[in-house]
Structure formats: C-alpha cells, structure tokens
Image (tube, rainbow, N blue to C red):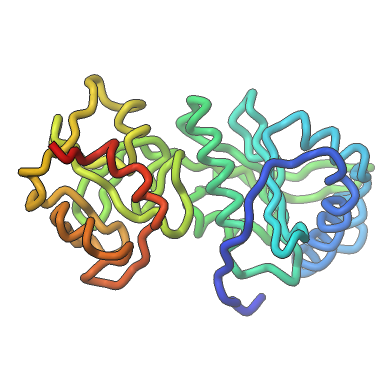
Length: 275
C-alpha cells in the first residue's frame, strides 16, 4: 500500500529517440518495487527478462507512446497500440506513485484511442495495478497467466468503454471519451472541467471539436444578446453558469471555486460572437 501524495500535473509529451535508456530504468524500478507485493522474485525476473533499452525504444516508437516528465526527468510512460486500441504500457516511477501521473497518462492514451475511432480500450494488467485501473473506470474481464521463460505470471484482462455521452451531475454531455468532469479526447487536463451548451441544438459538449465529431450539423455561436443564457456547465460541481458569469469568473467556478483552464479564453470566438 502506498500513501497518496499531492496530485501533480506533469508535462505529457510523445516518446522520442533516446528515451529507451531512461524509460527502461524506470520500467525496471516500477516492476520490481511496485510489483513486489504480488509477485515472486522469479516472476518479477520473468516479467522484465525481455526488455532492454533498445527493444523498449523500438516498441514505443512503433506505437503511440507518451512520457510524463517533471523538471526534465521521466517519471512515467504509457503507450497505445493504434492497430487494436490496446493500452500496451503504463508505468510510473515508484517515487512518483500515487500522485495522479498514471491517470494523466491513461487519459492521454484513451484520448488518442477515441480520436482514432475506438469506442473501447483493452489492457492486460498486473495484479498490483488492477485496483488502480478499476479507479480509472476499467472492468475485469478475465484472470489468466502468461508463460514467460517457463514461469507463470498471473495477470488480468480489463477494458473500458470510452463514453460518447455521459451524465455529469445530472446533465447529459456528448463528445469523444467524455470524462466524469467533462474532460474529453481533445482536452483532458485536470483544468478542463467545463462543458458548453451549443445554441444550435441545446446540447452540452466539452468542446467545439466534440460537437463536430459527434453531431450531424454545423455549430452556431451564441450572440451578444445571449449573455444571460445558462450555457456553461461546471464539471466539478454541476453548477450551470450564464455566459456572462463564465466570461467574468476569472477562470474559476463562482460556486465551488474549481479552476477552469485559462487557455479556453483563446477559443471563446468559436463559441461566442460579439454580434
């Protein structure tokens, strides 16, 4: 059992040439420390026996792989097999465990899967990771064992449906990979917690791209006479804000004080017109 630490917003970037060495070291540390409570030394040795820096780098660069960095140092990585919608790797450095890095990486992978048209993500979880994936919304399908170098290594097959619509505090929100706080495939940081009701259809979407991807009609912007329309949903508490209140809230929910992404201001013209 690991004590929960403060949640960290790490830099999530794509894997690149030269990552093999640092990520291989991270992989070995993660397996041998975090897996030690559920696997024997022989099982841990079998689990890591086929990974080396060159092989890991080739595998990551052949998939869609992400690296979590803090102060220029890798603290986690994960990857998606784009051919099958499979979460292939997801490892966090033991010293960074319990701070939300796994969730950030999983959300990046799930977003990529949704953008590529997958409605579900599958994975094979180690025993020590099952409860973590369950907290991320994955369900168990079957328990089985992999045979690696004649050693039986038990694991669990799991999957998660990527929501194209979701009830968020009693409001239906539509989009790609809609999260519990209105995160989506396009914007899924811990600050992306608003949904916008579109004037054209009266339905809530996390972003303009979600409306384009899911709806069957072009978007219509709200005008200057619509500022009192309750068109903004706070995904943190469920409060509906008027457009005026949202534009004047300094990127913070006036009801629950949840922080909104200040970068959304760069896209206001996609949703609101001055005419």
